[in-house]
Image 1: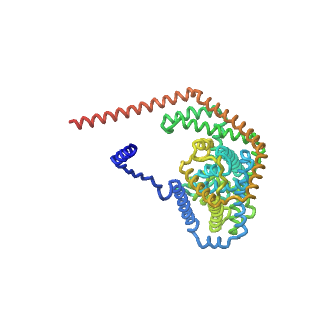
Image 2: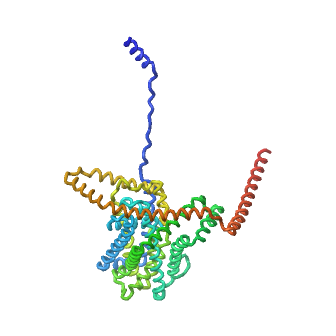
Image 3: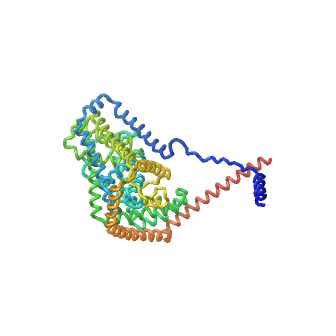
Length: 521
């Protein structure tokens, strides 16, 4: 009986239709460069192209004289220049370390220097220096600092740097203006003759407006409400803003975060004074570089050191609003315009220009690029992923970090994941002694952990307090009504715009009707 059942089952199986095979073709990864990598390649090509044009401009008059000056340059001053560049990076790293220790007491000086160099590299190869901050945030996450805390560090650094930049410029205009303007001749641009200091003043106004508007929006409630309600609504009704609610929310968060970080700085006034002093010293180091470039090519610069520093401050104002990466083209033109009267010879000024730009921009960019290529960091389980939604929200808390496409973050993720894989392959099995040492380190860490937790609890309480304040202010803005006069003006403008739209719609319909009538005939 059992044999019959088995035979019947076999017959049924044989009677079944053969199983159809379905071939599944998995999507293949696109070969070649990613969109993000192509974008950075375009930036680099743009820098190289502008550099080539700039070199042509600097060498076209008397290339032999310029090359002779460069060949006979005093190596001592060149080395001093290189030392100043390294000092510039070290002070930037020290500043990052001091600010970061508020969130991670174990943050080291060398980590700050590395982060500073990486940020400098991406700032130098992107328009308006917009690419440095987002990579710095990512680097912070590789250094055991959360993205939200990294954003706070960079906002505080932004406040200190912008304040120092403007203070230095104000002193430069007050102290050095009369002496320097006497040595300056007019320059001609697009057929218009003017003093190069005019561009410096324009840059100063732009930078003042940037930091000033943030302070006013942060601490002047009437202006805050006017911009967030009337201003955004008016621009939205003119169709200049697509998503007014999203824009209002983002601006509210950005302004509130600026106020929060400014208050955090004020509450830690000792840290603020120390970091602000370092910013001033760092700017002074940066502005003293053209003097040593001029000395390297044999220019007579006796008694002109401070004049050179003030001129460099004016130059920084000019390059701040040039949209090309690193202010390429504008920086060289500005140097030539500001320093020709001081140095007094075309060939010497061209030579000093090449040395100054070659070391202060290209050498520093190369140093930052090498650092980025070699640095891996110390990834941990709790490391934030930049592509996470929450991390994007954290990055939106900064009023100056430019929004980046998610592909930029994917590029960084892929790069570092490859480095991590290589590192893991090289990692060998621990010996008994290494295991014992590891346990000792863990014990030491556990002993110190209580103190660290207490500090973190205090920091968390402060952060919660600030966040409550931000939420309350955002709610107040949402609940408050618009100014009646502004609303009346907006309604009037909107009525006019709507009537114009209606007229256009009627005209279009009449044209369509006429076309249909012609076709029917």
